Length: 105
Length: 201
Image (cartoon, rainbow over all chains, first blue to last red; front, top):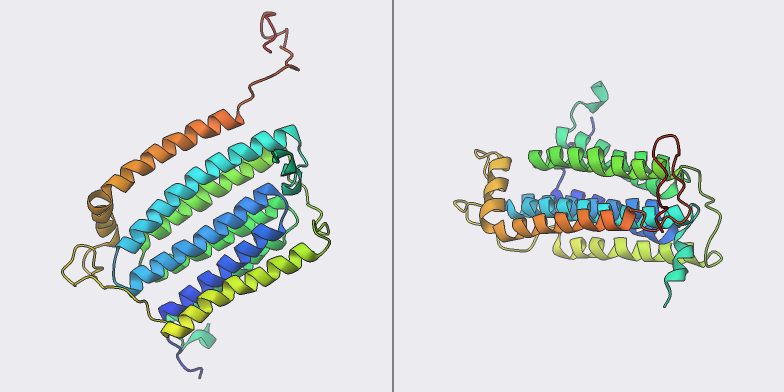
């Protein structure tokens, strides 16, 4: 039979690092502003997972409190970001991140 | 399911939820169609919620599903459908002629290697002060996590909590200002439903 492997908290941290790295690469590679935004959400989720894991490792509930704040900030960020994207894509429906060079001063 | 016997339940949960997370994350990055990317994002968010549950953060798991999967992804899909940009994107375009992907992958490996090195150097142990077992913020088996979370939120972090309410108001006002149409030079009123009036400029 397969030996019983113990899941240590560091496994969660490694998983969160992998998700964060995937999100970071996606943010750099993708050109659709909405998909870039989703990649930011991926990175935020990876960080919340590390906060919960550290909260468990250190036996301290304040790590989970931080996650609540991350959630609120993520919601605010999505609302404003999607507002910007709506304003941008309404003007030019096929706009990609590359077209934002018009913002150059 | 006899092949799962002998395995620790946490291991099974971790492997399955971790796979869902990583497959979903890859789906967000690799799917050409933004709608499929948004649905892959739901998979990742769900996997993270399961991992929250596995770590006894029950309230946060519920909030993760309600706020992220229920509100934020719906907002993404709403914008996608509203603007009608739910078409597949041409993924073969590379702004720097192949250099962008290469640079992003190198950076991604670096971002991954940095925490892995940190975990390896500390032996996977968190450094920092553990609260005494009698402290209000010490996680106990007897008090539900939502009670402790509420106490922490409304005592220690009360000011930060109030500031987030201000942040949310600012975000709502900002979104309205950004997304509404100010100038409508091409505005044509429907003569059947409203009396003719001056065209706003």
